[in-house]
Length: 184
Image (tube, rainbow, N blue to C red; front, side, top):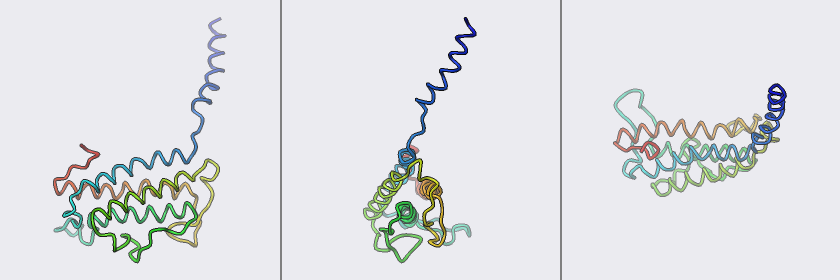
């Protein structure tokens, strides 16, 4: 009797788990993953006082030529737009002569906060377009239009790139005695 119960359980559990652990739609998964960098980057940009937006570390050779806090935020947003546009097969809605740090006319804290928020909203639209079926499909690379790359590679860039620069922005904030909202 005990052997039959174990056998029934062994045969029944995989079916139960298959129903409850069915793969989620890729768009929902990537959109959910985007919430982390969106929340942390946006809250940090909002927390930094406007008078410190032009702050960049100085005094050591390693800091020579680094982006200011504002440039870091705008760079994240600009790359978000570039990559999301490639995912969607659209023209980048954020145009700029400065291909590294975003539009030069976006200068004030309010403008930068809006730019960052809008870039994450556009990125969410791109993430929502992902499906289990199209993840490995090739699209034009955001950084080299002559090259094709899988959508999943581009989608991951928005996530890791945002956190890469967020880490640098956290250092800038802490150098100015600002505790990032995510650490409070």
